[in-house]
Image (cartoon, rainbow, N blue to C red):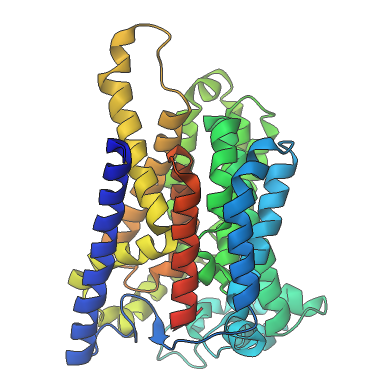
Length: 452
């Protein structure tokens, strides 16, 4: 066993210990006073070992990706790689969702009384609903919104209203939309990684993005849709700042602006955006129109919603108040501020933890070893990949310390955590790590009945 692999295993083992401690401490707190408000801390789930219609397809797909995924990703024409990854990620997510069955695993989750579909019938007059949106956010407000409707800007609910209007009503269609759209985030990340770190690393990252353990929560959660919008925003910006058409920046801005109408927390996507701009600093200096187009695009959705009568800032202020009226005001910050990180480990998997260790090692090598090699020895793909992961990590840290992400971060942080996974491209022994990723997802999905 090489020294590098030993260090990878130590990092992954440390992450496993963090998860174990979070489980043990969390169960004790929940048993003693119930303040965590989750049934199987740190996850929102219940212990229920089970099999389902998706079990065999999930195992077969995992085996196929482990055996052939790295080879296909390395040899296929590049244009086919993101599309193939999207297709495989879609199949993986569907299989995991169907482990719980069609009704329980897809339809009922989307039709839960706390979800967006519960409010679709109240948007018969969209402008009027937007003007009065803030009147129904607080728990003691008359006819208050369901939990997730109140907890997000109205763009999230309007998406499902639109699906209903075009005839795709009900939990089945909503779940299918979230699964297919959410899986496209895999392709978006590959586009961005190729632009910044090179095609070789993008190809190596592809199988890990497909077998993302977080697909357990990408299945039938609107956060999967949010993740896709955020991922394509970053991907288009990456294209704009790496010499492609500057008009990609306008598209990135439109998606950034729309993302902020889907979730208040996606304002933190700006941290990732700044990281992308810094990585493409030379292009930005030479063509500042990139920033102008980005900002102009980002203003479109917020201005449109404001003209229709929705006050984003007032809604956010009321959301913070409602958050503390409910479970958010009871859940102990002292536990969740570190247990959230255990949730993150379960989303990204042990391979990503090891990959992040290698990313840190690449940066250290660049700063302390290669710097002495003189001009022309500047940072390559691994360092730029590490910088992208570093921006995502910073976003997670900000979200964590804010105190507005106490529990349920296995779905809430998906738009940020996905950007850590490409670090797996730096690993050796790829198939072994892919087995670990798939094994974690299968274990979680078959031993626990998750809320999403």
